Length: 407
Length: 204
Image (cartoon, rainbow over all chains, first blue to last red; front, side, top):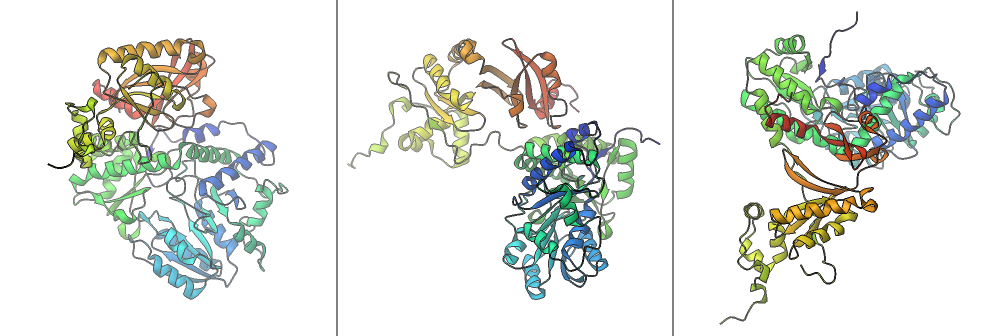
């Protein structure tokens, strides 16, 4: 049965599909070994390195699966049975890495922080030096709680060590600062449906040259043939043999490639400003009614706004009404925060003011708060950056009159 | 009697000048004393009291300044660097008659074939106010997601078709004829919404 009508996705992934990505689904079909596909894949490789700000000698590709495959693939390639894995965890996705590491037969150690709190960088660094793991795995933005972890600080603390640094960039890359090379990251991944606003189904991943050297030097083959980075590189590397590996989802490549290109065209500063302004406007609108940011501003993940609910708001009932009566999809809390918070997506195409205007109109109806849309409009205007701010280095300079004309 | 302090001399063009309301607000925000600024740093005083005259592509700034001096010979013109547009500020601000004369001269300038094929002049009025633009349009291939006049296109249909699939949701575009050629005017969707609100329409 075909789903009827449009639903506005304000969830922390999947997000509304970018028009350029959607348009790519109407491109003509090609085989996975077609020269057009290889040419387009080459562009994706270049754009991914720009997106992640990775070194030129990094290996970038799309995996045929979601961000969770990106997570598992990294661990499967970087770890051999018995290798030590240190996971720094403060939410569902950190714990998922713990589980994956155990299933891969790694010697798993965990540094935890309470839910809703960021990882303690000093503690993670100290544990890394004490345990000397082969891999340190960290989630940059913990989607389950809306917390941004201090990846740059952790990177500083382990710089120069042999530890391979794996970072889950699922809710950050493409929308917030992410510096793969400068932070010394060896493996990073995201999902196409998050900050890039392509459909779910592929995981853009990047390995550092050091990571690939370590993978090539493995004693035991990667347990997952499908996820083997060396096999994938033979297909993806523009200078490689273009060897068949598996039948890649060509249209997902095109859609994700277009979404990446759209993000790069728009620019990170513009994307970050969209998020900042919406975050400020949403919180200012809802605060008088008892909603509040669930996460301290100092470590709030910009792309997932977690808000606590005031007394009297029935989480499940409101979200049901939003979905069934207004076609607005929202996400609640996970685990201990279930029923207590909403997680509003500010990733890619869901960070658009027109979407949150619709959200406010719907919420006004469901909660019988008719002032919400008007308040949001005012808050949105208040959150505007100073129009055309004059930078300190852009001081006005007088134009010298030509000879014979005095000013 | 104390020795004469050279900095205590108010330049001739600022003697008796009353700061504008905007200048007072800017000075208050920055913690500046306008009387002291007038004596000690007169150019900063002039900039605080200047008003935007026109936005220009950087290589057109000198031409625009020259037009300003033709209609207001005593004006001081300041460039505020920016990309893709610089702003030219005028002190004292041009009065209505001088602005009308400036508009005429700028229209004459872009009517010249050697300039008009490369630049446009227009006055934009939107909910943020009024601004003048003497700028180069951006070629469709060079457009990188900014608010701009994009073109020229081969015709109206090409200008209408160009935005499809290119614009993010916060931008809108209208085809626009200019001097016999077709362009696409890419603008902030927020402005359109504010416009609709101002005219009592439902912008949602």
